Length: 390
Image 1 (cartoon, rainbow, N blue to C red):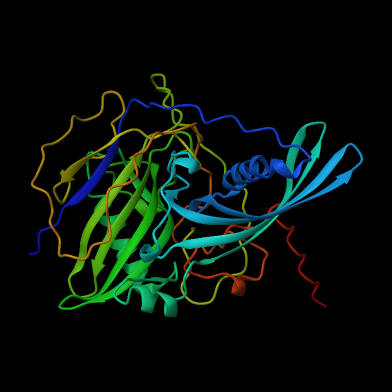
Image 2 (image 1 turned 180 degrees about the vertical axis):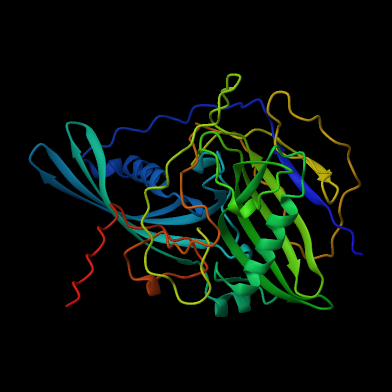
């Protein structure tokens, strides 16, 4: 039987964070473009509750129109997707941007804001999110690079399901985890192993104790501020099955110990309304807290791994095993561990892995790349009423 292990990147229990630089004052001068762009980036990342955080690449233009008591500002910004998922507490300005060979994603955004009495507010934005290079362009740049495939691809989802099952065999976790969303899936062909699938998935801790007889998929997630989260990268061979799972854990922003006999609070359902079902297999649903230095630790298979930093009184860490050395060509590396900034909690979004949901709801779904998590327009458009049937 092929050997297997899970590599877990543990975040420290002690959270060391530094405050983010204060936002500069936005004025009605065109020289205030940099301050306006930074304010816009903060607003976009605060509203973007799925997929990955974005950083500013370039300011393409700024238009200022004077009005009574202030001005209206229109910005044209180019953004680049980072490697930080929204469950990652890293401040977006400290996140690493993807390289072209990692299938970079960009967004062209138009942002509207008003400035009155030295108070600047974003009132509207719309973005066109797309892959930085087309498949044809990537073939010329890197013919051997993997390609992004739809988040609900049946072949890719098989690799995701296997990764989640393997993750939940790590019995030093106090609770089962369930899939929160699929971040991205890449695929490529390798000699001797056939098609390879490389997935990035976000997992959330549930109420269900590890070892309980309940099926993990039926478990409900803990409240967002009370749950551990994990971002995992997996590699899967169409001929050999699951190769590896690498995870980084993020502790809950609310670590208050419950009183004796006190039960975990129950949070209501997310304030989302699902759109019509997408064609084909149901897609997965596709925040910010301070991380700390991550240490690599190997986990043996089948219930001998390490989980996130345990709650007080939790089980002690288990022993190490030799590192897993999978076949060459794995695109996974250690996460970015630069200096953290200000903490935020992860968004409360739709968790159930079989619930059809598109984040940019009530819009033309055919206009979005199914392999990406687009930046949805803000404010979100109201749902159109269904016509009455006669």
